[in-house]
Image 1 (cartoon, rainbow, N blue to C red):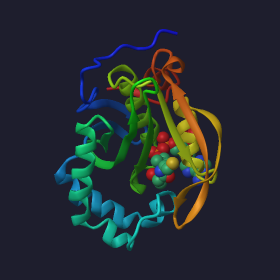
Image 2: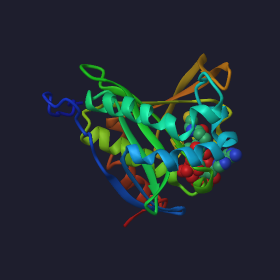
Image 3: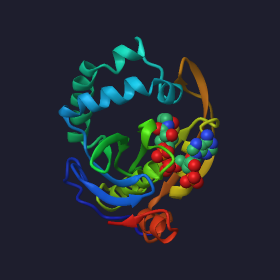
Image 4: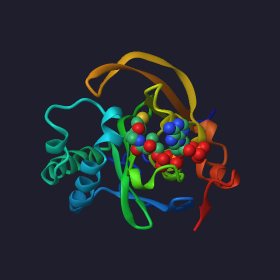
Length: 219
Ligand SMILES: CC(C)(COP(=O)(O)OP(=O)(O)OC[C@H]1O[C@@H](n2cnc3c(N)ncnc32)[C@H](O)[C@@H]1OP(=O)(O)O)[C@@H](O)C(=O)NCCC(=O)NCCS
């Protein structure tokens, strides 16, 4: 198959961008670049949602309260913005009905003949089970294949994380294998299932497929 062409001179193809909107059961989903002024919403939701999030996230030093306090957002925002400006990641906020509702990030972007990256996401406990993460994955994957110069997106997920496995399956990812003791998550080396999708597999696009399946509507 012919490889997709994109601007080889661009330093950060596909970034910045605003994606959506797309209507799902939970509301109207859109993606926009992270902002410094997201600190308040980001911290409030993550402090409240420790039990919902911590068991699935990479182990990090220090207590959850410190790592997710208001003042821990600015350095994260700065680091992600720097990576985005170097074309190494695309860090989006997920909004539902224009309110901050989570994050979705395309990370570890490798170009040249690999043109691959991973996708990671979380959604506020008040917005789950309404199709938000699936819509966000579909929007971002379509975007990085069409405008980001990428060919393959990978997602790794703990075998116990049924909602996230469901998200990837609904979005059209295929399971490739099991990485044993792959990632230090919640204080231990955890097995992860590897899911992936390549541009050839998206057909009319993941968003178009969600709409056809009745899981989302264009607004
Ligand atoms: C995983 C996560 C992002 C899903 O977000 P979401 O917006 O609820 O996702 P969606 O609504 O698009 O899809 C979730 C699916 O899982 C299903 N689900 C929810 N809880 C479930 C459970 N305990 N067991 C099995 N399926 C479950 C939902 O019913 C839905 O499937 P359906 O549309 O067929 O009914 C969210 O739960 C989250 O942030 N979890 C914590 C962080 C995390 O796990 N991140 C991913 C790490 S790989």
